[in-house]
Image (cartoon, rainbow, N blue to C red; front, side, top):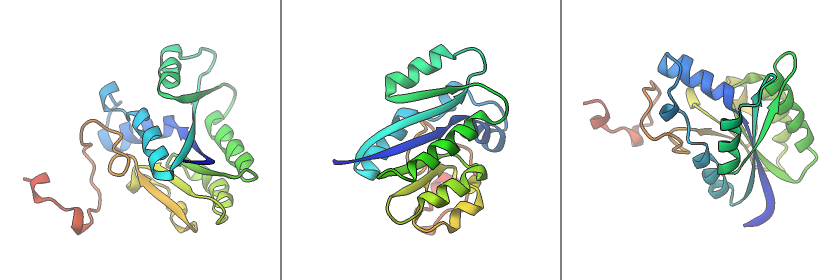
Length: 181
């Protein structure tokens, strides 16, 4: 592996909200949520270098100890935040801005268009940059950014233990009629 690092910036609330509200139509059960360890492993393989996983979460006044301990156990560095407004978005934006001047690759895990400006600055041709989410829900403004990889959390990363009930455009080379019979 190279000496370079990939920073994996996870907006877990955004992924959870999209999974629940747009795909499942209800709050996801624990077994339906992404296996975050698979995302770390996939990123390390796909970018062929060490990964620093930062998992941003709004903690309010109480630390979600069980979840934080689980994140640490699988290799993430939790970033619990409190304050007024969209604290997770603000922290990810600041982190992405700080990474512009670093010799590092960046993967954002979110569908949120609030990060387009920061991701655009990272797409300067000097690094690998990716956005991970559910392809059909990734903000369209990301699609025009030069060199940006759009990575599907389910189909590319394999972060789920069972297929999700998604309606998506299927490339004909991937179409299996048995999926519909």
